Image 1 (spheres, rainbow, N blue to C red):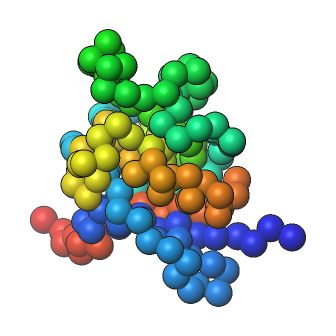
Image 2: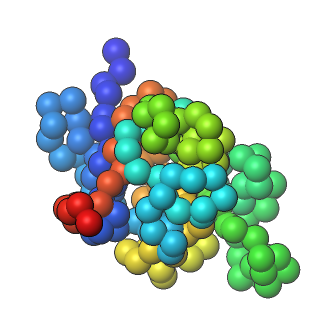
Length: 170
């Protein structure tokens, strides 16, 4: 029997927390969300809010720092030499947890579809920037951390992304 986990991503704290089915904290990781803030619109490069699920897990058994392009391993292992060779690449490394929104009109379907926006939780080449917003919309993690997270979650597990800051009406 699969034990369902819930992942809560707190954007204001740049923190990802994994809970078990009894709502106990399993583990916590520092993350990096979008440098452009929160938002759901296609091409916004913002991190989408709301309730999601893990749609797919990609990268099982690949070495740490494996490079992905369009969700496919390239066979490369990230290095500073490789970064210099491809300076404009958005480095998606080690493992991918591909997210799919569950809230129609908020993060699912139309111009706000998280899955069609290719929003992932993944490893990054910019590990020194974990803890501050720095991504193009995805949730970035230290490569060793994404390996551990990948091993403790399943396709179908819930992912809630929000900011702990309360919002007031203008």
